[in-house]
Length: 148
Image (cartoon, rainbow, N blue to C red; front, top):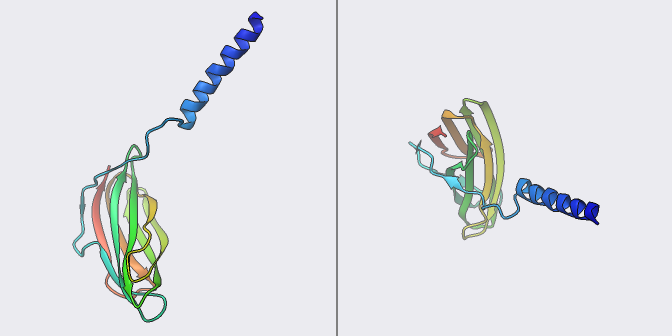
C-alpha cells in the first residue's frame, strides 16, 4: 500500500511538472510596442493577381513578448476594387541576425480580408524591414526599427 501511494504521488508530481513545462494554464502570447520609423508609410498600394483589381495592404509590426530579436508582422489586405484578388507580399530585412526574406499571400474581396501574422527573426538592435508586392508592382513600404 505504501508503494502504491509513493507511485501515485510521484505520478501526480510528474504530471504537474509536465503541465507546467507544456504551458497548461499559460497566459496567451502578447506582443510589445516596437520603436520604429516608416518614412514611406506602412501601406502598400498594389494591383491584384486577377481581374485588373487595385488594392491596399497594411503591414503592422510588434515586438514578440519574451522573445528577444523577434518581430511579429501583421499583413492585412484592406480590400480590392473589382475584387476578389490577392497578392504575394515579400518581406525582406537586415538585422543583427543577418538578412532574411518571407513571402506572405493575402486575399480579399472589396472589403478587408483576413490578416496573416508571421514571426520574423531579425536579431536584437537596429534593423531595416522592406515590404512590397511580388512581382514588384508599385510603391513599397520600409521601416527602420530597434528590435528589443
